[in-house]
Length: 421
Image 1 (cartoon, rainbow, N blue to C red):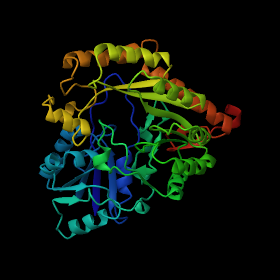
Image 2 (cartoon, rainbow, N blue to C red; image 1 turned 135 degrees about the horizontal axis):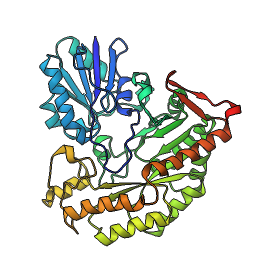
Image 3 (cartoon, rainbow, N blue to C red; image 1 turned 90 degrees about the vertical axis):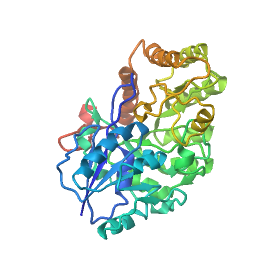
């Protein structure tokens, strides 16, 4: 049988340079699909969907709430042709009841060890409306190497620079932060993959630059020590979400190739200032992830925060507007207080105000969002600052002999000749 897997397009963050990483969810899911299924993948953010392509079953992979309006259009087009559609992914789990209205079936939870049974049901003509494994995650021993071969490698580059490959070493998160849905999606318990399986997957990735997409690399000190020690011989260069602020862990992370880290910056305290400094002292760049519109922020607070980011010489800043995604702690609070202004999921792109802020009007918060981007990047746009980070990693790669140029015609990276270094 043939299964067509689609990753619908979505509106990109206003003011940020548009770039496209190879999607992780579809590649991880593809590893759970039985080998006898002919699986083809389309990332609509970079490729058009061929709606005339023959398929027995269409899978729609959704990550973001703002993908859903387009995902529903895609599903309708295939269903009108008599092709059944199954939805899965993060946004499907967050909006399960609504998504079910647009699908023949939905899959909730993690697919390892489970999706083969879905294919069996489909082939018997017994596809269920809902497959719900949300409360029963599989053993992470079942997580195999993502099937990155389904991706069209030619399209994931920016101005000739190959984008990072995504990989994960754990699931779940014990922190349950107020704007985050991870506690609902992956559970509030840290669930690490076997380190030897993680290293095996990293070794299989030809790209030298990785994005470790775990929700946090600050959950288990001893596991991090073991992971970074095992990663060091690979000489990969990688990006991640926050790393535990611990001297030994940071040293090992740097030795293992930590390139830069996404660090939430929520105030102008010495705690944040010192944490940024320690990352930089270890040669690790910092991209600040800054949420605007929290209940403790006034207009002056936001302006002081932008000044602070420039003062501490943050490498890059990504400003977003607080967005109350379903099943997040902040959503529950704002719903209880009657402060949700819109449930138009297309506007849940983290650059639009969809709730009533406590200390300002929605219009003022939207204005401050643009102020933050324009002020921080006044002396050099997002592209230039990202370019500086890429220059740093290229220098490090050339020093340790791992620098690779990407040849799109051959769809692979290859080592730079010494005469060209």
